[in-house]
Structures are given as C-alpha cells and as structure tokens.
Length: 131
Image 1 (cartoon, rainbow, N blue to C red):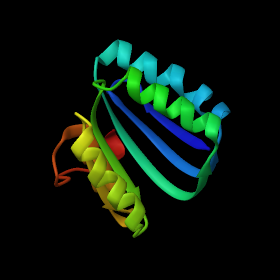
Image 2: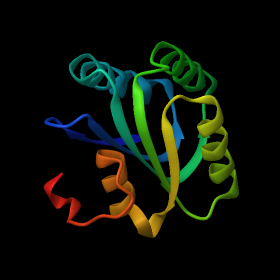
Image 3: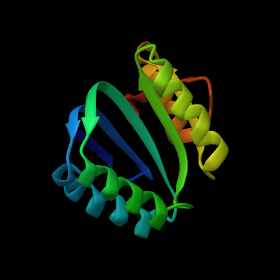
C-alpha cells in the first residue's frame, strides 16, 4: 500500500510503500500524481520503502503504464530503504534508464533524502519540517 503526503505548494510528493502493492493502490495515487504534473510540469518524489512484500501483476501493469505515460515528468526521486541490495541495484538501474535523477538513501537519512528530493541539495541546512 501507499501512504501519501502531499506538499500542495511544492512539486513534491512523498509515498511510503509497505506490504503488498495492488491495482487499487495505484488507482488511489494516480489522480494526485497527474494533478501535480499538470500543475508543475515535472515533479519530485520521495519514496520510503518499508516492508515491501510484492506487487501484483495488475499493479505492476499500472506502474508500467504510469512510467511510460509520464516518462519525462519526474525530476528527482529519492528512495529510502533498509540496506537492501535489490533496491540499491534498482535505483542504480533507474539512473541509467530514466531521465530523472534517482538516489538511494539509508532509512536513517530520511530527512536528507526528503530535502534532496525537494531542493536537489545534498546537505540539509535547515529542517524539513517547513516542507
């Protein structure tokens, strides 16, 4: 499932991913993503991957359609997760095939990851609470 935090006055969206991703979860977030893209042109994402179990085939299809439709609409994507080699590899692959900047951060660097997603700056000089 996705837990979503929208930053309405910024081109930033935060998603926490946990459990199993199903088509209904994509159906719930796609309108918000498309609304932000319509307003800002390109958006930044912060993805906090918690206990990700798997993605259903129909959810994977929704993800693929979203990626193809909005290929150039993502600017920066910050991913936080535990020390998962699979997610680190997926992030590295995404940097090769996506026009978006994609970076992986350890879970304990959530504040830095969110700051980077919002600003593109690698070192947080202020609290992200103002985001």
